[in-house]
Image (tube, rainbow, N blue to C red; front, side, top):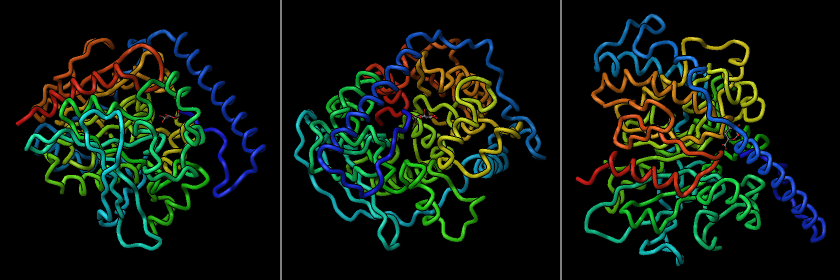
Amino acid sequence: MRRLAKRPEGASLAGGALAARWKVMMMRSLLVVVFLLGLAACASPPDLAKAPAASPPVLGAFRGDPPATTAEAWAGRRSPLLRKAFLEAIYGQRPDLGQPTVESRETLAVEDVGDATVEQWTVRLGKAEPARRFHVILALPKATGRPAPLIILELFCGNRAAVPGHPESVVENRDILPAPCRSTTLDPVAKIFFGKRINGPDIAKVTARGYAVAMFYPGEIVPDDPDLAPAALAALQPGVPAERRGGALAVWSVMFSDAYDVLTADPRLDAARTAIWGHSRHGKAALLAAAFDPRFAAVIAHQSGRGGASLTHSGAGETVKQITDAYGFWFGAAYARQASQPATDLDQHQLIALIAPRPLLLGNAMGDGWSDPAGAFRAAQGADPAYRLLGSSGFNATDMDDFRPGDGIVWWSRGGGHGVTTEDWDAFLRFLDKAMPAR
Ligand code: GCU
């Protein structure tokens, strides 16, 4: 989703002006979505044959490191080198946000969630003042006497929009939400254009399948906003020179791990069967999180695009210049330079390979050319040798319709455009059932 005009923090507008502003905002949002939908409808499926193969070969020599031919060489030598390279060239450092602790837990009265119990947790990061907090909505399936497998999700539109009925009891700071998310009036429109599940999964359905779902809005720690993010990023990384500083994606990726820490301390949840999920920008964060944190058992990166699963050097979709011009604060300072000086020995298949051998689903939509599905397909093929080296079945899809939910790297794609649909979640659950089977 594109960002629309930002309301200055704390600004309060008089009734008439506010109404006029909402009208303009709604009109603009409508125009953007109509435009995007038009693009998606007109687009023909991306041509795989035109997408270049991932380069360099994932197990080949890399910056003085000889080819990685054993699992030991991959884990001991190659992985640390690649991790360092990704932080330096793309994301900036991943800061320690401080020890996460749970300050409070409450059960919320929520309708339309089937048998699920819904809780709200307040999580504090470290002891810094002013306190850094984010809120987690945890939906638990009916107790079975065994810990439930867990899916941790980052949300685009804040926690309240993810809970049926948008209850006021769900803590929310509207001033840091993306503009189209600040009014629930736009909700039905967003759902028509970006899919019914754009603001969160069907809690009743996912929990009925046995999964617990934990959702949070990472903008509570680093706002998803080019005006507000730089100060938050600097404050989180005191003394770190701007050149090395982590961008928002680095912080959001660390938040997956912080959420994991507090959630899996709860005996109702299964630490060994915990997956992470992200759509688009949060798909990028999910890939980065899993590349650095081995505790996630499975990963879903849906339409993660540039800086996510798609090859940077694929020549299709969003360019490095476009993404760093609009969303430079998501990345480390070095990434923008790749627009003119591409790092030819580093590409996203190597990031995917760092997740091996854990099951990974790459979600796509054929009309979502901006996120470059063909580039993601080639990246999955490029990562395959690392998955196989570590004993996984790897990536076996032969074309973009080839959904094999039990494989190491799973390709999921549907028609239509950018967004999250019920059909997508059906595929995600089929994947998770295979990736994290009951023990
Ligand atoms: C923008 C951005 C993409 C991103 C998307 C999203 O379109 O250019 O890189 O993935 O927003 O997060 O929805």
